Length: 350
Ligand code: OTD
Ligand code: ZN
Ligand code: ZN
Image (tube, rainbow, N blue to C red; front, top):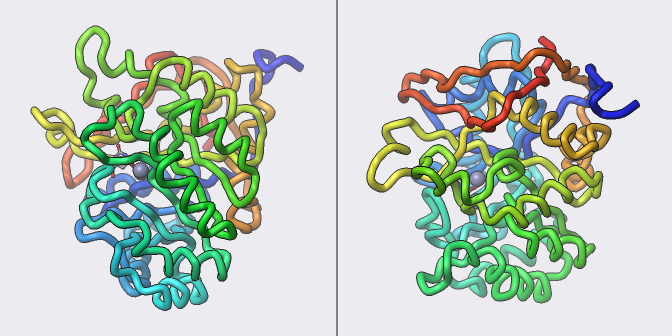
């Protein structure tokens, strides 16, 4: 059967291997949109202040579970924010207790709320060595922050200057290159098999830098790492739809209120939680690779993290274009939903 003839697709319930849920009123507003479709998510720790210790991660997990509406099921997988002061023993204890699934490396200043990130990578080596020893993965925001490096080159330069040296010094460390945006990153993952995986977001499969900048500036398409030129988007679609088990979904759904995005210095982030599965089905169908959607969204991530796939399934149904609200209302304020820019024909059956 050709992809266009398919009108129903049942897959294992997907997981989101990179998600921002925030806290308080925003958490309450956005969590149901993720829990509606996803079984688990790797929950990013870039709160203010960040989630650094095992105790903070346990408390954050409780706040997430308290915000989950009755009758919904969802498992947050917690992440510790790596600082130059992180204690290897605290990390190991949080991992052993099932509190923390991974640790997140943000180069200081690379993205939203990353000021407490790492400046001197040698200072965190004892933590990385401990993680390698216990098999705990490191999630990496892979961009250098040097002001003399062009923002469109920051991912490629990070691979050469930071990531590759870290992986050479700590070869047993399992690393996830988060939200890859370039052909360079895709090639690096393909060429370096051992202990390496990568997440790809929904929006980077759909937009290139023209969508942000041509014909008027579109703040809702501005995110970090910033979308690159079309050639890179094509490489990401190829990687995501290939079935290659090293690539898996991490939406990086990153809600900000409209006033925070629509100002002279607007926040970075695309909010894709509500319509991600519709967007992905459209992208995979256009690539003639619907059969690999389950690998990307539901199977490759658990495999990398050494977790079972979800028992439940979801069914995607194709029909008349589905409409999503332009924005959702939260008690923190309105949050604009990612606009794919083309009709979405697939919806998740209730
Ligand atoms: N990128 N926005 C945010 C995080 C991500 O780099 C990221 O993971 C955020 O708002 O937390 C964004 O554009
Ligand atoms: Zn990031
Ligand atoms: Zn993120």
